[in-house]
Length: 175
Image (cartoon, rainbow, N blue to C red; front, top):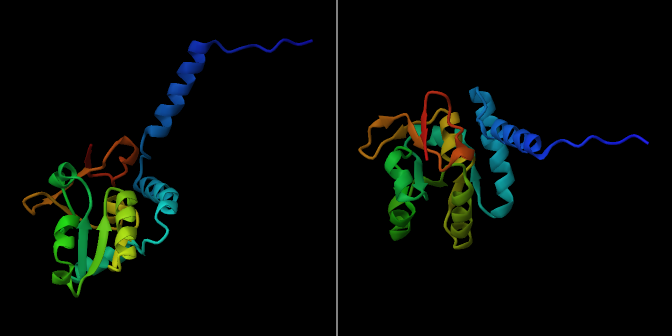
């Protein structure tokens, strides 16, 4: 009878850490990063099935024509780093949704989870708010830009955490 050789636990732990480190690193190229954004987003969608959705490319095109109202549902510390140009907070939007008539409202967060939950609540309340597919990261991969708290263009983006460190190359991610 052949005896199975056991791997020592320190070696197993080291192998597990190496695997975890390899999985937590963002892909090196923008195509891989974009694919990972949409892979994560696809996994989140089940939690907000009634939220209307807007592709990032459509949002960028609408913004270019002045027809988009981005609604930032992120925390103040995240918004302080950067936002989509022309973004308002969820609180500002809800204070008077009518003042934004004529624009397509789209909620966003880092990748689209928090904004998907919020957009679904708004849809159930009868307000026409879509969720930005892929969130702020999808926006960037579609060619969108960011502004800082003073409205100046910026390449710094708050990505919420290491898992979502998937901004296109050339951007500085913070969390």
